[in-house]
Image 1: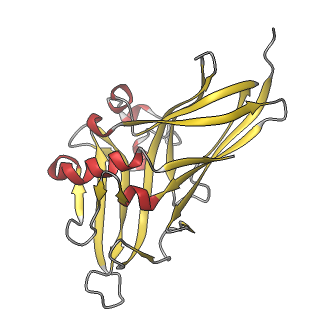
Image 2 (image 1 turned 90 degrees about the vertical axis):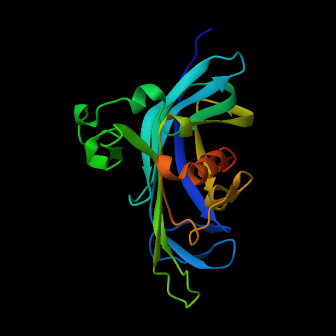
Amino acid sequence: HECSNAPFNLSFKTYINQDEFMLNNTLYDDYLGRKFRVELLKFYFSNCFLEKQDGSMFPIADVALVDYASSSPLSIDIDVETGNYINLHFAVGLDSLMNASDPSDFESSHPLSIANNTYWSWASKYKFFMLEGRVDSQSDGIADATFSYHSGFNSFYREITIPLNDFNITNDGVAVLLELNLESVLYGEAGIVDFVNEANAHSLNDYEILEIISNNLLNAFTIID
């Protein structure tokens, strides 16, 4: 029984309040209707596997940096075995082994390179999820108050499993769109991120907000195929 290979593409699309997410110029409403815009959004996407019905795992990506400042935040092209798959597994952040890497060991094009500005030298750890922007804190129509959230540390690593229904990869291959709902990250089941009252969180000094973001990420992804 020979397995043949077929092309598999995984790409990202991000929405907020039903609108496709755009960096910088677009203003969105937060949960209180205050206008905000996002000026930086990037996060680590790692340990991605497709799981077959028999439980075997097919690796898709070791680690990638999803960066919304680039023209395509993430697109992974790989050949996978044909057949039926039941789950997509991936993580936001880096596992403890990757998080212990030395960023100077990598080429500048590598996701873990120092060139990505995702490393805390003071902590010798990476930032997993980074969100920065401005909010209209005075309700005067000008989004000028800054907010900034950077999560890192092993406790904020989150593994996510998305079930694949009747997902059969034939010789023609398949393209999968992983949709991130930013609204769910900011105002999800685990709690609310308030850009005005708690505008900054950079790991251990504001553990609670970063835990809210990390836990909200668990339910913020869906697959469109």
